[in-house]
Length: 358
Length: 241
Ligand SMILES: Nc1ncnc2c1ncn2[C@@H]1O[C@H](COP(=O)(O)OP(=O)(O)OP(=O)(O)O)[C@@H](O)[C@H]1O
Ligand SMILES: [Mg+2]
Image (cartoon, rainbow over all chains, first blue to last red; front, side):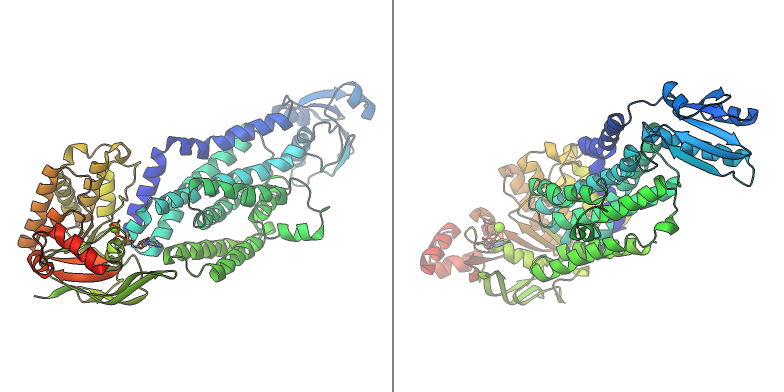
């Protein structure tokens, strides 16, 4: 009952704050859209040369908004001279695809469609597909790699900031102390905070994910709900981290100061810049960054089409991260009021549960 | 008469700075007890420790026979902090019903209590307004209403009438008197206004974290050979030095 009353109040407060609402729900969409236009110049139907394609195959491709041009014979030179996105040659039931790959995301989408259609046409046994690239290779898609990371990052960033400031306000304005003069239990406050902000985090996650996939056509091979689950986990970590760090801040401005320290470095560790080439200690450091695991999981689902079972165990790293933070605090801040410790403990516990989901 | 609140050898230190030093105090059931003393003497700290939101460095506080801090005890305590702790984004009514819903109360009763508390502080017409748009005195009154809303047996009010106009102040005091007489409520008030201290059954003079003297206003006047409480206050200050 008391928890419900508190959840209701937290949500009411947030709903009244129009600017925060806008920040939470629309800012990620705007930035994502901008990024999309920066990285994806064109998005017209790809033109594909087909040699030896059957009638139903071509119809299926046209239905999947591929601009099919039939040729009797063609080679790599044709692709360049006729400004095509790729060439599909069918010989004895096996598919050979050559992709121009000037714009990696177009290539990827095209290849994905061809694979799907080939599988459908072949009935149970999908024909073998050989792929060649004129420029670059299959790993060059930038926004495709960036997209999943960005989705995760926005969820992380906004939930972190808004939940952190929410609790901070409660603490600084004296209402938290006032709450402790009522029969509410400390864990009820913690649960209410996690739930109240959690609900907004869920809504934000769903909006961002659907916008990215439906409107921005972000590549999405895996299952949508897997993406949502990973983002939710990330939102919970962000929620905990925000609440946790807000206990060290004494004003909103100090909370903002955590962004360059806590949030920005995570972007670099999330894999925007390939981690493989980095120094060992940097790679090890990334193992304790929640965003690293989330980004990796999101990439696996959205880009490589893996499922949740393939990426289980990823969040174990986040668990270590929060565990470490908690232990550190436990030693250094013995004198903190109990309620703050409860919040920190909850941050730990909940990242622990997050570690168990795999 | 039974003791409602019993404070034994209570000390509080923030870091090394001692704020309360070995305080002993008994407050009886059904009395209005005033705490007066200079700014920074430790009144708020003492009051917070009675509620249980500040922990004791040493010593104990018992309220209604139970050792503080105690969650069930808080059902029976109405606390009004010195600083208004309200949610500015919410309306007065939403603030009131939020705090009210944290206590064990029947739904039907809750409505009546909100109406009663709002009426007492003359905020009924203003309840639909957001607290951000309240004046200082209105916020103070809302805080008082919140302290009263769940009909607690013990009221702990930290400077309740600061920023409230004389007319309303008188009517609030009249209501406090009624609550004491008709329902036997125990009321603790801190104040800097000697008129109000005069209305208390007993008062304690707090100075530098200790209790200098306890008694009825008349007893204190006799002890210090003073004509009014103002003089007692000043005299006590001189004696301490
Ligand atoms: N959180 C805190 N940390 C450190 N010192 C504190 C803290 N809270 C209060 N104090 C100190 O405790 C002393 C007593 O403060 P308190 O608020 O109890 O005074 P007060 O009698 O209520 O004063 P006023 O009449 O101005 O409200 C002051 O010296 C104050 O500086
Ligand atoms: Mg005070």
